[in-house]
Amino acid sequence: MSAFFQKTRKRSYDLFSGYQYYIPGIKGTIALILLLLAGTLVGSAFTALFTLFFGADASNTYATLIAYPAMFIPPMIYASWKSRRNELFDTGYALDSNNFGKAGGWLMAIMASVATLAAGFLMDPINAAMPPMPEYLEKALESLVADSPVWVSLLSVSVLAPVFEEWLCRGMILRGLLQKMHPAWAMLISAFCFAVIHLNPWQAIPAFVLGMLFAYVYYKTGSLKLTMLMHCVNNTFAVICGQIDGVRDIESFSMIMEDWQYISLLACSLILIVIFIDIVWKNIPMTSEKGNIDVIGNEDLISGDR
Image 1 (cartoon, rainbow, N blue to C red):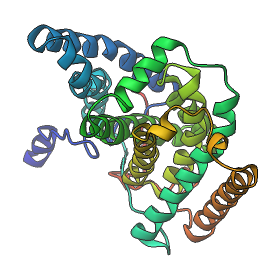
Image 2: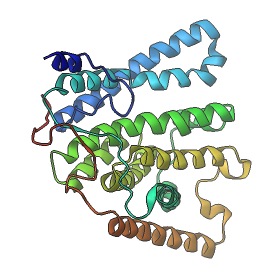
Image 3: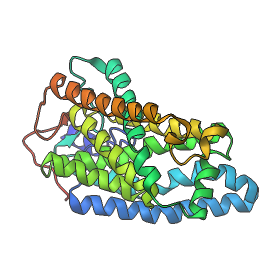
Image 4: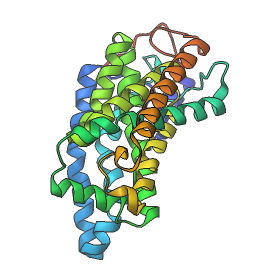
């Protein structure tokens, strides 16, 4: 009896284990996205306070380091509450597993990073074909990537964004949907949510494509650390390009390459992604059709959006 009450007092808030017993379905996914959108008000409040105390110039440079994580406070509180409520009765599924198969973690990390860069380069023709960004959006992105100090850009874009967005889109949404529906649908919906939270088509379309790649890797490995790394690699490449004068203003890499070089790189990128997907598929055996996600607790129980 004492063991029972001891367990009910357990409180876990870290990014990986504090949400294991909340398995959101479609309704839960919608709730998390709506709470994230509501979180923009929290982020705006932090920005306003920062501006009030430190001035507009400092706010434009540094406020995002506080405002961006603040956006995720509502969905994280909600998911933590749901997880703690279900902990005694439902099966849990780890947000982060290490099912890397024969390749092992380090080799998988290298291959996944290369595949991420290849996928990003394959999006270049699509990005170039899109209409010009509105001026306000272009200035906002430039201020985040090119005009801020490098350490601020790297911290916000290469660290905070991968950590919080992967927690939401792969760790919560995809992990939950995999337990509720066919994996292909789960990956599509999670990638769509990843696109939606970017709030504009110029970022949403590449985000959807990369989201499908991240979803596939998460499905096969269960590793949130790995998708965070892939996300970090993609965003860091964008930050680096934003710091290079000869690259930041171009609409397409075709503008700084010979045609044969550009086409060859596109072809090589496609081949690299196909090889990566094939290697992952053949060398990581599936423990469950619902994904290689470690089960926590009583496997005979059925978790749900309770």
